[in-house]
Image (cartoon, rainbow, N blue to C red):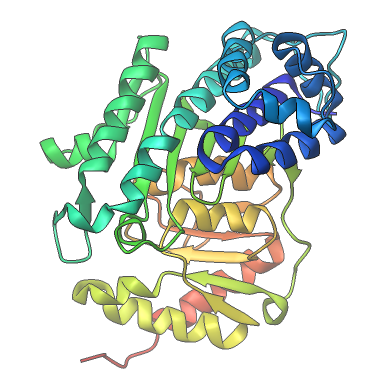
Amino acid sequence: MLMLSNQLLAIHQCKEFFLNKGTAVAVATIRAVTNSKPNVYSVIRRHTHVATANNTTTLLSFKNYFPSKLQQTLNVYPLTARYSKRTIQTTTKMSNTSDDIKIHNYYNVALEIVMKCGPLLREGYSVADADYKQKTAAYDLVTVYDKKVEDILIEGLQTAFPESKIIGEESVSENGKLPELTDAPTWIIDPIDGTSNFIHRIPHWCISVGLAINRELVVGIVYNPIANEMYSAWKGHGAYLNGQRIHVRKCTEMNDAVLAFEISLIHAASIRDKNVKRLSKLAAHSSGTRCMGSAALTLCYVASGCFDCYHIEDLMPWDIAAGAVILREAGGLLYHSKGGEFNIMKPDLTAAASPELVKIMVALIEEADALTFTIK
């Protein structure tokens, strides 16, 4: 069984399908969700008067009525709803500490706000190449949708949690200064991680929202609206993809591992030699190498077992924060590139599914850095 937040996330996704992908897809989705999650169906049935999830005729007759009633369901049962002892069993034990309850509330509210940005970004994705500009370099791009989504996220999160602070990509770009991470609850936001993919209609980009409290990452949400993939995690309670628990793959040998590495970083002359050398060493020892163009999604792919390890440097906190929580909660590990403690404010990282892979990667990176050739 799932936690209430994951059940209601499934309801949100039913609504998304109904409004954006048509009745037939919505019917199939609702059937799939309700067959495996009867408590979701009980909520839908009670507040939409749909007699049975298998009655296609009934659902089709509610084509105009169902979305509005489903919205009423979401209003009655917002994602911040409390646990119901009568209907909910969990796969993880939730402690009764005030910190746990508080973090869970942050997590649920953030899920809802992030989900609301989906329609705007789907709209932008269809016309993304019409309106973008460079920031610091030809590979550092921004669209009007980056700013629109960041504004929605900041307004929603600070309205719900006025005590919280924000470290956001676009707001930092505007003032040119990276804020200090303090003990205060701090949202670390990237409205579109993978903007180049977004512009060129490559469906590997996402909204990335992380939360740090007392300088520790405790919540991570990574949402790809095009693929309808919602990765989420909060400290101590596991990692999920669309409400289903995910885990890293059991991989301990580099020659069995799929490596993720951002070859696009070779574009920057100042770090070209370093990245070519490291890619050469790491790729030569792995079973395959992939480049996705989104650090947040790549960490989620390691978390879900698609990839096994990932090395990247020279990014910013918002590229990594949410994915870092999700990977850790899925059983993965994050270290500094050279094997030291990972620091979100300088997120040079080696991430992997096992300590054995981390050890091998750190050794290969050291070997690569000792090479003397230069790329011209």
